[in-house]
Amino acid sequence: MPFTKYSSIFTPDDLEILQKVFDKLCTERRLALKDGDQRERLALEVMDAFQNGFTDDVELWRLFSKRRTAIA
Image 1 (tube, rainbow, N blue to C red):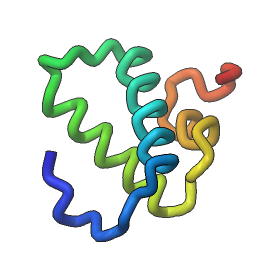
Image 2 (image 1 turned 120 degrees about the vertical axis):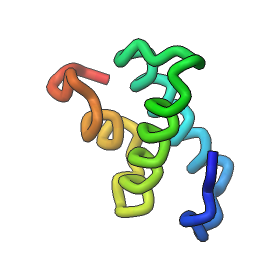
Image 3 (image 1 turned 30 degrees about the horizontal axis):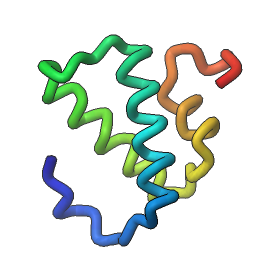
């Protein structure tokens, strides 16, 4: 996955949040490993939102979830 546009340094805690949200969204959307393009787009969207201030895992998940009102 190209990360050239991301110049920030992510802490281990940041990466844990990003991975948790990404995995949860992939499961929700039923994106398998073979769905590489869709997974990459989702990862980039999640990272963009994180860098724009959505740093809470529940808040970040709700931003992209199709079940926004569901309890995380």
